[in-house]
Amino acid sequence: MENPFYRELCYLEGWHPITMGYPDRALVAGAGFNEGVLSYYTYQIKGQLDLPNYHEGRASEYIRDRLVHLERQGFQWKEDVDPGDLAKQVKQAVERYIAQDPLPKAWLVAVEPTYTEFGNARPDLVLRSPRLTPLDIKFKQTLDEDRLAQTIAEYAYSWQFMHYVWATGKFYGEPCENSGLI
Picture 1: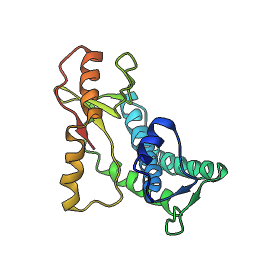
Picture 2 (picture 1 turned 30 degrees about the vertical axis):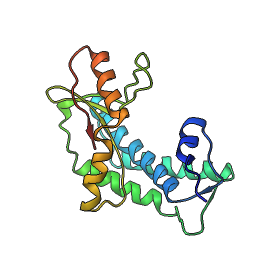
Picture 3 (picture 1 turned 180 degrees about the horizontal axis):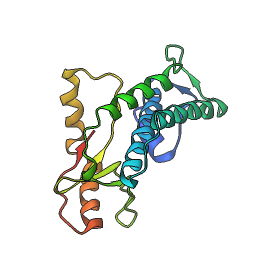
Picture 4 (picture 1 turned 90 degrees about the vertical axis):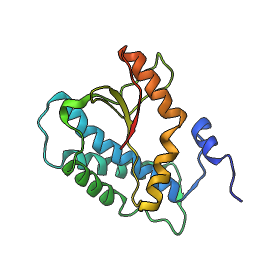
């Protein structure tokens, strides 16, 4: 039977079952994608010269390291789940994202700011376009049109996004009225 408190136990207690499935594979993929994309935006904000394939490599390296770490910890994948080409898939996704970067460089304010004085709030990006907007990056390997609207709606009124808006406004001392999803 499936434990209804599984995600709650993982999130609050740090507990993880020894056997991992597709949701765990998706978490590793999403974290790797964020590593590559946020590395790219960090370079953009600092005005550093972009090295070819550096950010894509960071994503791949993160995933390989994470998979090795999970294996050393004794975790095993379910029989029908193969994480074999995950690093390659995420590397290609980061390449595509960077090639089609939707955000003007002038809008970037911060990458992964942490507002500890306002609780545990850490949006992935903060933009000013013209108002402050905290953004969170979500990675989906497949997402058809029917599922897109449902996925966006899941985050529209989430406590996490509302907390980002409140904490970002307080931190910068200016109005922050919306958040976004990449």
